[in-house]
Amino acid sequence: MNDVIVVGTDGSPDADAAIAWAAADAARKELRLELVHVIERGPYDLPRYPVPGLLEVLGEAAEAMLAEKVSRVMAGWPSVEVATRVMAGSAVAELRKQAESATELVVGSRGRGGFASALLGSVSLGVAGHAHGTVVVVRSAPVERGQLVVGLSESDSSEPALAHAFAEASLRRVPLRAVYAYAVPIHVVSLDPDRLRRAQREFARDRLAPWWEKHPEVNVIVDVTSVHPVAALTEASRDADLLVVGNRGHGGMAAAVLGSVSHGVLHHAYCPVAVVRCQ
Ligand SMILES: Nc1ncnc2c1ncn2[C@@H]1O[C@H](COP(=O)(O)OP(=O)(O)OP(=O)(O)O)[C@@H](O)[C@H]1O
Ligand SMILES: [Mg+2]
Image (tube, rainbow, N blue to C red; front, side, top):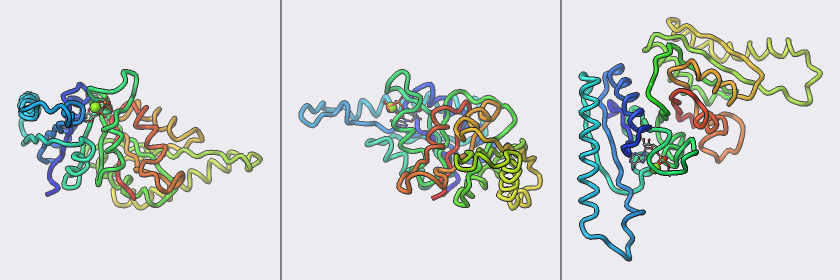
């Protein structure tokens, strides 16, 4: 069942970038592609003022929009088998459902609605970290820069994110930059900063060691820094094809499904972000 990459599209330019990213990934992984559009009836279909035949009209428009996207995929990635699906309901709920039986769910960071200056829409934010599997959020047309980045967190629970990052780097045959950003606790300002840096570097290497053994073919760059993780990952994303993070790290509210670092990089990263569901 999990041999398909699902892309959500509302016909927007960001969703087009998501389709292009997903098509390239489907070609690389030899997976099928499914383009999904959810007709969100709420804004148009007020129960007190029903418009007869509205769903049919919206359905036809959706089919036409998807047909145009399919022909673009077929032209650009002829090896990829591509199908479409039109559904009615809540885009977040339906896309989350689709993600359950997919290898990954891919969406644009913005869509057709929302405030002009918002960096992330409600659908992308509603699926990233919340869906069953990995969600990739794409901001602009993919550019090949030849490096992947993974954010290293202090907790073991981020192992699925590391697994994903190493597998991707191996498949793409590109180096993997593992970024570990640590905060200097205020009560240890008297600590020797060099010793602290060495200890943090050792910690990062220990966390990576089992994955290094499993994927000796991957060239890993260990990047340990004492700036804020969102700033460090955002900066690293400038030179990356994909930034991989877990849905949450060890800190913050236990109830939050999306941690503050993942949330922050989704807003600011310069490259597509894969949020891997870890817990
Ligand atoms: N109705 C939909 N059906 C399928 N995918 C969708 C739909 N709406 C949005 N998406 C996906 O989610 C991405 C982000 O769109 P989103 O709706 O979150 O942003 P927005 O329209 O700018 O803001 P908002 O809808 O919150 O006002 C899109 O690029 C697309 O991939
Ligand atoms: Mg929208």
